[in-house]
Image 1: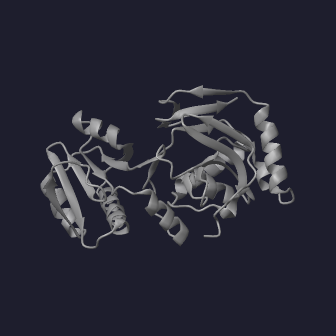
Image 2 (image 1 turned 90 degrees about the vertical axis):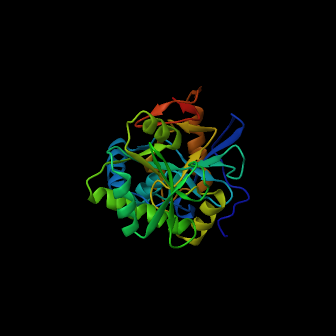
Image 3 (image 1 turned 135 degrees about the vertical axis):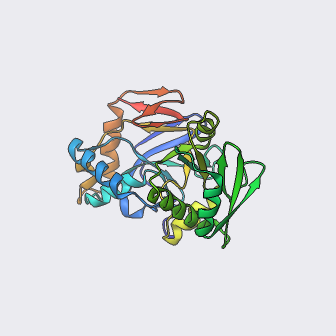
Length: 287
């Protein structure tokens, strides 16, 4: 519980879309992660940041416990670079304006349901037909012909995600390609016959994120999808500032504040695409 904060320096505050976004530098070793990182992604991002010399956007962090909600790979990269500070966007995690959703595993190729039931049974799970995909913490399988609930031998959110990891490994061994999509996009792809079937992981609650972060454990990659009403982009913090071993955190934040005050900022409505990801929230873009 020693990560609880009462006050800390903030470089820039945005009040918009019903949420307060506090952009700040914090000590990177104080941040708590809740998801594993993918080494390939870490390596690619490391190369990009090393080439540009800047961190383009802050990671989204819950203000109370410093739990990283979005940006696990950026934190891992900057740790590997020896950075002392991380640029974060602090938010009130328990605000009802912040939602938590899941990333669905979309398999493009067709697999007969009989094969799925047989092979998933070998993984220690059983499937049964259900009426819809919204069954809370249950692991769900969506096919064109209907929905199935995947039951694990052990109860709990951790067991459910362990099963997801096993199923993903089985699919990749079989040569199937897996894409991570929002539940809305995954459902659309299934209806339009662009996907063979969809695996919906158990729905995680905010309390699960906080509990597992504080415990020092992590969920598998792509376990959560946090939906924030708005987020900042285009901060472009120099990596040299984040590596500085001498400067105080207050002075570091003053330098970041000066950097941001010299930029213009504009709001971009939801639907903005940044790289390969489309954001359903508003974007405050610094230029």
